[in-house]
Image 1 (spheres, protein in one colour):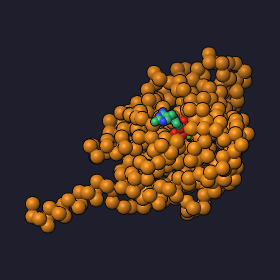
Image 2 (image 1 turned 90 degrees about the vertical axis):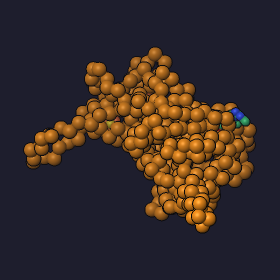
Image 3 (image 1 turned 135 degrees about the vertical axis):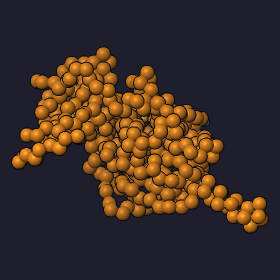
Image 4 (image 1 turned 45 degrees about the vertical axis):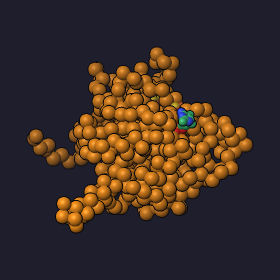
Length: 85
Length: 284
Ligand SMILES: Cc1ncc(C[n+]2csc(CCOP(=O)(O)OP(=O)(O)O)c2C)c(N)n1
Ligand code: SF4
Ligand code: SF4
Ligand code: SF4
Ligand SMILES: [Mg+2]
């Protein structure tokens, strides 16, 4: 692997969150415990009749995967990507 | 509103450890058992054991359903008997990593005797107990973990029996690793399960969990989040916690953390050592 060139500003950790809405039971844990307030309930329902989360503030996601750890239904998780500012 | 959805959605890394054809699971919205299972899967992934060498044993109860969801060799045993099954597996096949994943009623009420004896023998198994303070699957009856004055279907005026202190029970019976977290403490829970999995001997992790459907609603925790927020506000983390300081009161602060991490010969090591010595003495 190539070494990244050193930049003045330290790389900002950025993440992307993925939601399998059909699997969600609407407990809200991911929304409640996301440290960056990335998520909110959608106004839509899934097939099971639950409101699922959506990323209303995706740029704030730090890829900590707390949402993925809290979710009892394996319906959400994140992937971390390194982005130099 | 913008939604960050790439196409196609990648596979959640936990899926390879689950029997996805059985998902969605039966657990209610807001239940903590799925979060506990999630932490276990992630700990297992990090531990790096060969999946073929891991076996999960559960008893009966909502928590007992875990055995049916993991994509590993697993046993859904009779009520209270997960630990004896696990013991048999370990003795017959010592290279297996055996994990018992079950509820407070299964492990500590009907199965309480097996629990203390496996700890006494330092049987090399990991026991994960989801403690939701009641027998959830059968309708929310009180049991030996229900706090005094908590209401259940069979204690409509509040329970009046002092509950078991599970870390204290495990420690005094002979466990070598003891930790206790709530479903709010997902990172710590995962770390403790990982340590327990790597520990040789009887390791025990208690996971305090909400059961919104049967226990929570009767006790003014109207949903899962309300109970988890309460765990967050009322859990005390100390550097070197000792089990007898855990407060088991209803709606009181309580201590979580790692209580014990010691070394002591396992049942099989002690047995093999003993027989080796006898053989040497007798020259056979
Ligand atoms: C021998 C026997 N006695 C009683 C039962 C009924 N029963 C099924 S699950 C259960 C209690 C489950 O409580 P717990 O282990 O705490 O699991 P939870 O549902 O709370 O996760 C009982 C009493 C049974 N299945 N078998
Ligand atoms: S990865 Fe972290 S920051 Fe991103 S949505 Fe999940 S909890 Fe929020
Ligand atoms: S934690 Fe999981 S089940 Fe609960 S709302 Fe979020 S995605 Fe849905
Ligand atoms: S009854 Fe309670 S423990 Fe059982 S699945 Fe529902 S919330 Fe969970
Ligand atoms: Mg229970």
